[in-house]
Image (cartoon, rainbow, N blue to C red; front, side, top):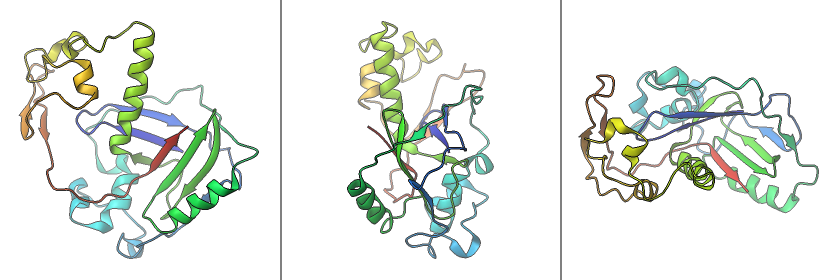
Length: 227
């Protein structure tokens, strides 16, 4: 399974790859799922040419959110590590928990579900014909990874919450984000007004316009839980 974490505001991508050889009855795949017809089952849950189509076309969501590499081309994909993580399945998974999860997934539009504990897979599920080697977009779940990495960096003395973000990213010091602190960024309390914002234009000549969507729309996405 390949998980891509794409920040909503910045195109920073991390990859966690689980060895494809890992298999157990704890790992199950379903070619269909709840509301399958609405979500494009007749077209094999294929992606739509324009990424933004998923906002108004439910039949585009499964494909667009699980085949990002075929839809969006303006992101940076990191090189996969040669030292892949070979996660094994837990030998004594809690049957009660698995039953509850299967019941939940059978009623909700979840493309993928994965629980890891102490470096072992507790349960792994896929619906709508999705596969573990697909490139999923997980939206705000990336915040959890960023927070954990920030905590590790703090523990090692590499970063301070009171520091300005521009201390670590000098190119934005003259932008609207130049004076916000790491803590404010983590708490999403920068005070920067929403709308179309153009960052410092000296970022290799690239104008980074951020378009904040104000309409609340339901999305299907892969779910990841780390215990």
